[in-house]
Length: 153
Image 1 (cartoon, rainbow, N blue to C red):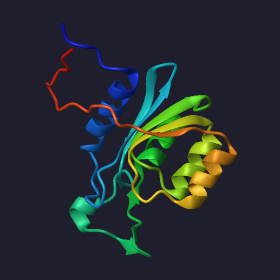
Image 2 (cartoon, rainbow, N blue to C red; image 1 turned 30 degrees about the vertical axis):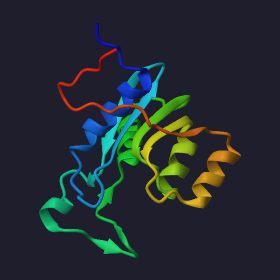
Image 3 (tube, helix red, strand yellow; image 1 turned 90 degrees about the horizontal axis):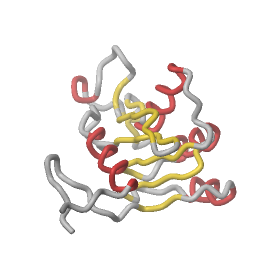
Image 4 (cartoon, rainbow, N blue to C red; image 1 turned 120 degrees about the vertical axis):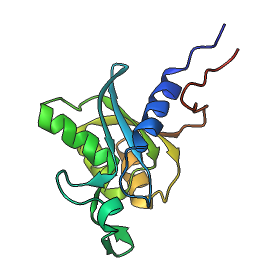
């Protein structure tokens, strides 16, 4: 009998799947907001809705960052704002450690735990803020499955 995925593996697998929708090839990032073991919103890196994406127009670079792209974490928060869904007491599963601006927004929105896959340029001040607010940030090291793949016991 196949072993059931843990909640952490399940939500991270969702984040990785969602990252496949990203339209900025500098980083394919997926984010999943979870409350009470239920997905309340998702997001991926991409341009502002109804405007050109990096895949279509190229990158709009400023100080080493693509400013055309809205980050996955912000898109998930914005989805909740548009739909009137509270983000208080939620967890974030994300494929890359959040940038400083996303970290600040996540803290302001009431995120209580961050689980990330890749330690992509973690900003020291983001870490300081997370520690100051006592928000755990945990690197996920569990299995991530390809589509159609199952775990075995």
